Length: 181
Image 1: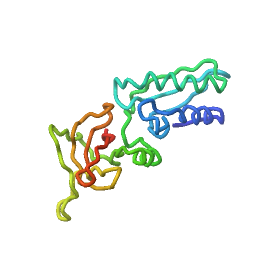
Image 2: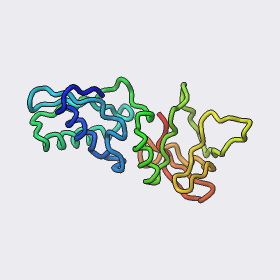
Image 3: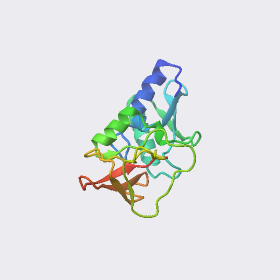
Image 4: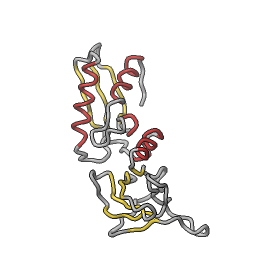
């Protein structure tokens, strides 16, 4: 996100403070979907927004909320442009965003995903802390309630396509896991 003027920086801050419509505990800045803000005159602005995945139904609500916030700040013309490259990744979620997800009861995505395709499970999968001599391909998904690594996948999809439904085998609580992309 490159800004060239103090006004663009202020507009970027305002647009970035808009809550995500599906995860209102996160702002668009914390989610990492807001790419840039460009002034196009004294009262016109163009915003670059990257969806979490192609076809994300929340992109329309995000755009409308950004337009509303920037118009309230005096911008008469607000254009929100969807930018697909570079693609959004869960690595774009800020550290504060990851902490907020966990405090909200959602296991954040594991940081620094390994290169290559993300494995897809076809049924319930248990992830346990590995034995010391067997390093895991990915760290286990930890329960946001008790911190246990003894969790299982119940469904690849939860309330949104970005999340999977898991259950902790230690505290028995179900929880959402923001999937790595």
